[in-house]
Image (tube, rainbow, N blue to C red; front, side):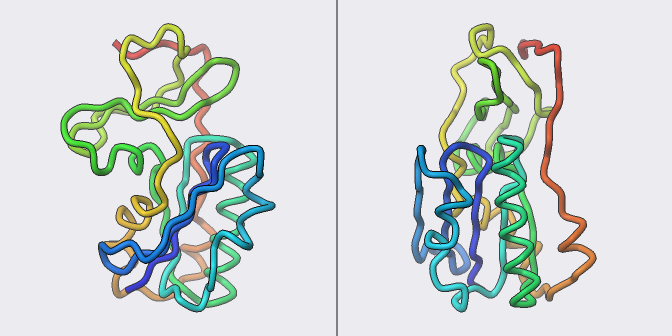
Length: 181
């Protein structure tokens, strides 16, 4: 099964095509380019995909809407199964031990979640970056890991309009911010 994956939760747009656990290709397009401008070219040949995977955030409100709209549109138009995964879990996916995955929120804040061997150990929190006591794992969530996280849901699945349109981004609101201890 070939899974076309994308993540637009950060200022960088990541896209990948994987077949089972093998990466066929992967692209990262950084700022100042915006997801809505680069996705059409970054996604490549849509005919190669058997399924679609999308990062659900948390992250940029507009970025998440653009990515999810693109994923839903492709899934609907091509009648492909669609699944979503946590963008923070994609950051922590192949990291052993305990890590704190983080993406930028706004106004010097971070979306942070603790993971142990790639599995969540608590909820997503909004923290002040300067007050966070750990060194967070940051960067654009790899689309290849979004695909890997979704693979078990997509394997053997078929297009489901209700599931496609029910998929929603993870808009985290957590103010006032408090650091994890």
